[in-house]
Image 1 (spheres, rainbow, N blue to C red):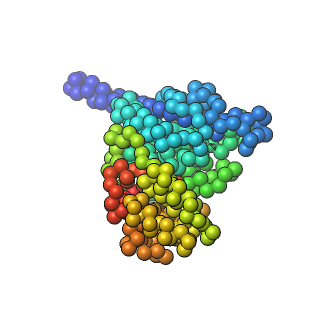
Image 2: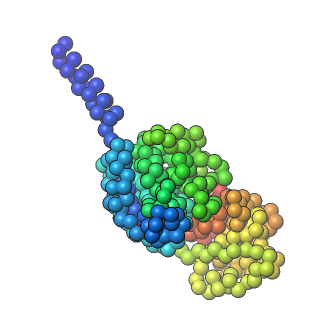
Length: 350
Ligand code: ASP
């Protein structure tokens, strides 16, 4: 009887320890405004990004230690407008390696806001893990009055430490919202509520708790056909902005430079100016992939065979991916196929 009691108490203790054990969260720092520094506290928009090292960032938010066991790692120290495809491949490989470790429960990536949406989409589709991968940034530098970085970082670690955040695809945490990296974009510079998904946030994070309301109905993580462990380089994909007065020279220049695909950042439904259409048909006949995306700000949604005969032209439509996200998905698709029907399938599924 005594032995049974001992076993029962031991099991109870295990449960209690498990409940109170802190998650291990790694913070991968890449630079950006969250690590930015201005000359004065009133400089909220004039400053230098990528200045403050990760250890100093973590010291600035001692509350992190109440949420998780955190460890920082400096991967780059860059403003995100200068992150190359090589950089995001390297970062994703690091995230993938860490996600495989049993002593890592979640990963937070601090990043500049300018290209956060591209990097985080890439992580979502290429890192085969269920562990939370959370991207975070700030709109004001760490030295500014009312800097948004510290609370955003605390919120990101809260999300990464929470088991509820598993298997949701890479997340962007900004301004108390938990957003899907797939369809969230920087819609506004200057304001702290810069990141918006046209389909809404997945949830909220407030005072140390996460509140989820929806999940993503697309392919990501372990269900993706793209695995960063098998990718070393990305093909050259260019984005060209469309407008009524567009000329063909930029499209030819992209082809000459060796681009494998052109994302046409078109008007409205990804529409192509009449003067440019023959050029895109010619380039397609020579093997270039043409992807019609939309530069509509609050979220384009390009319908196939509407305002252009995509079936006949052999073109792809970017669905609801904006031009910069379409560049990432097209580059990934081209690592597997050069069939536009397959590329189109990928756009529908991710
Ligand atoms: N240019 C900065 C960057 O993306 C802007 C920011 O982080 O808000 O690194």
